Image (spheres, rainbow, N blue to C red):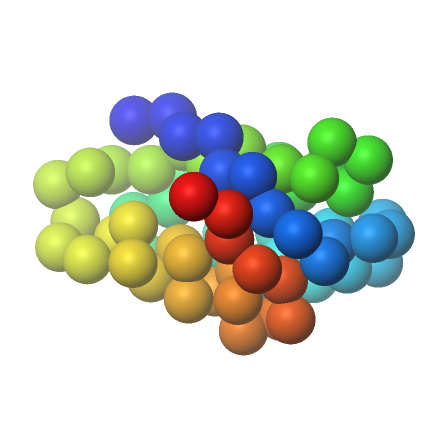
Length: 69
């Protein structure tokens, strides 16, 4: 499944790279692109992995970025 997650607090490429690396490390994530200028994280993941969406959100927020919606 592919999901676009809108975020607040990801102001530069450095923070986007940190968020992207953290989300890419989540079990079940196959691809992640974090874009500071669009304030979004685009994630491809296996929705069959238990708790994957919560883990993705936690990985984003662990880097000081807030998930919107």
